[in-house]
Amino acid sequence: MLITCPYCGPRDVIEFTYQGDGNRERPQAASQDLDAWNAYVYDRLNPAGDHNEIWQHSGGCRAHLRVVRNTITHEISSTAFARGGHKSAGHKTEGRS
Image (cartoon, rainbow, N blue to C red; front, side, top):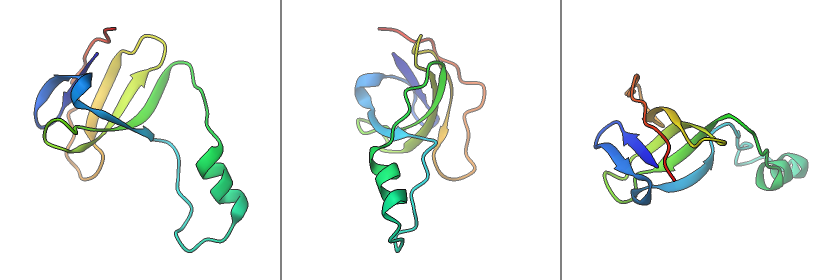
């Protein structure tokens, strides 16, 4: 599978580290709501289709990326920096095993 880093260009998935679900929202650090923290830590969805994910280019520029990946075909439809206004719109890479 290839992931297009907005800074480095297309790279093999081996250079990246999966950081988690890009849709989850962490409770406030000072929150003592145990139900909210339990949901954040333990509840996971298993979507079929496009999914927002966070990846780090750990073997390259070390940037954190937002990646939209199809969980069935592994096709990546978009990548962008996780923070900031920089985007790599239009970068599309085909999924490979």
